[in-house]
Amino acid sequence: MNERVLMDTNALMMPVECDVRVFEELDRLLTTPEPLVPRAVLDELDALSGNHGEEAVAASVGHDLSERCRPIEHEATEADDACVELAGERCELVCTNDRPLRERVLERGVPVIGLRGRNTLAITEP
Image (cartoon, rainbow, N blue to C red; front, side):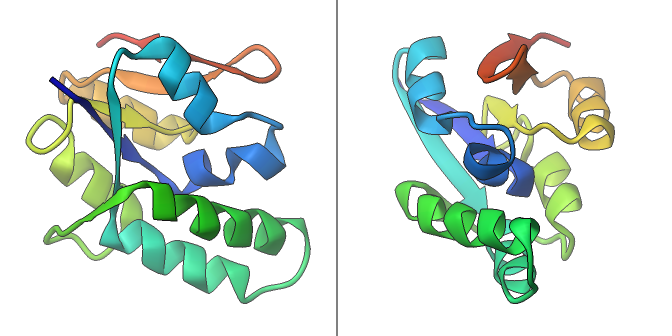
C-alpha cells in the first residue's frame, strides 16, 4: 500500500532553499511514497515564481517538481489550510518545513516529514 504524502509549498522549494533532495529523502524514509500536491499549493508556486530573486527560482523549481506529484482537489483556498484539511483524510503524512503548519498538522494527529540537520528529512510523530 502506498504512503500518501501531501507536499506543501516549501517542501517543493526545499531543493533550492535547503539543498534537500526531497523525493530521494521520501524514498529513504518510506517504503512506497505517493506524493500528492493540493491545487492551492500549485497556485501558490505559480504566484511566487512570477516574482524575482531566489524565492522565485525556488518556486519555479518547486513547480517543476510538482509534476512528480498527483494533484488533489480540496475546499480550502489557502495552501496551508488545504494541507490541514487534507491531513489524515486523504493522506497519511504531510511534508513541510513550515513550523505553524507543522503544529497544526500534528494537532490533527498526522505525522509530519520535515528538515532535520542540514539536508535530510525525518518524520515527527504527533
